[in-house]
Image (tube, rainbow, N blue to C red; front, side):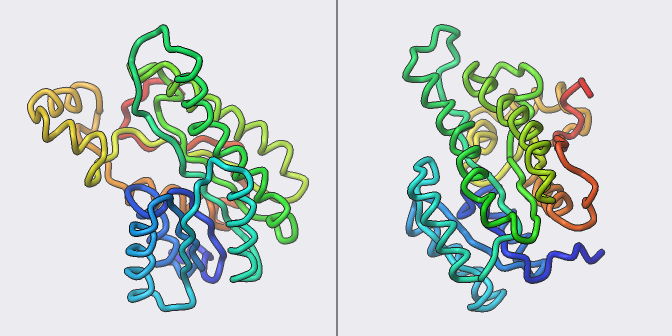
Length: 257
């Protein structure tokens, strides 16, 4: 199926490794112009070189940037548009679930989770809107099933991921007048090298496998490419009447609608 993403300019936050890298690769494979971003210079450069070898010099650039900082967000978006002439899709894949599980988190820990899991994505979307207005476009937030149901993750993480879903829904109303669609993808348990689930499997294979078998109807972990396919669809003209949606990619783990 041709998703109609050829030559679309796509800015992906946190895309030098893991799920973000898989999303970047998926867009590049569809013929999109891809902006790879990340905090680690070596990781960004390595990913860009890999993509250039497969997709060509003129189809990918890398930007080493801290996307929690508004001034760096503005500079990186402007740089991307200066390079490719436009902006069509922004994927806000930014956040962290690592933290203390206690209920009585100090203010500093709450602020840390809100800053990285909610405000960073919101700021990326906000600063991208002026570039997307001219020809419409798509904003896709990467949240988590922890933002949909209580799963025992750190309370501030679950709250911040739920806030992303709510923010995206509201933003979809505000930006519809500019023909900008806003959607969210909520992944479940995704396995890749260095991920939380990779570490859990290495630490205790049996208990981790038992958990997955008991809680995920498909009885397996997901892979980044399964999240990628959902993002590609939502970004494409094939999803032209979908906005304000949250697409869950979790093997059936969540129980609600």
